[in-house]
Amino acid sequence: MCKLAAYARSQQKKTLFIFCNDCSCMQKLIPQENFIVCTALGTFLNAQNGFDTTFFKHYVEQEGVKQIILVGHYPCKVLDFLLQDGTDSPHWADAKQYMRQLKQSFEALTFDATLNWEKFIHYHIATQVQNLSRFSFFRKRTGEAAISIKGIVIEENNSLEVVETDHLEAILLPINLN
Image (tube, rainbow, N blue to C red):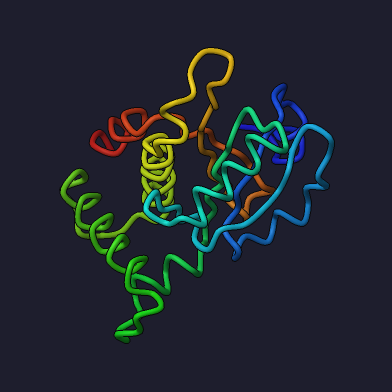
């Protein structure tokens, strides 16, 4: 674990950090030459969304980004809202459906209906890393043109400690053992 600012400065490749809009710690990062900071509500990315694809193409092709880091955090009010909201607002429909499916698969993996937010956020970010890696734009890029995609999770109430969440498998094993 390390502090967020030190972690950001340690990145060797030009990096695009994507934070949840609700994450207060992004103000602690001052964008530098080697990294760019932006937000996505709930750190949700969608390969079918033309905006998301255009967004990534711009940063990779125009800004020279070689690495993308998705930043999850807890407590996250956005994810909590999506799980608790009982309205049928079409504005949130895709995100709410994703959250319901994510929660169901998380509960099936942990054999527990009690939501452990820390592990759930790791699971969400690892799933988003996996989903982003499936974007055809990234799959087509190989060799030196390949883009590194990984995730980190920040506990905002604990001095912004950073825990890397690179692969879905890496967090599934600890989930099943605890």
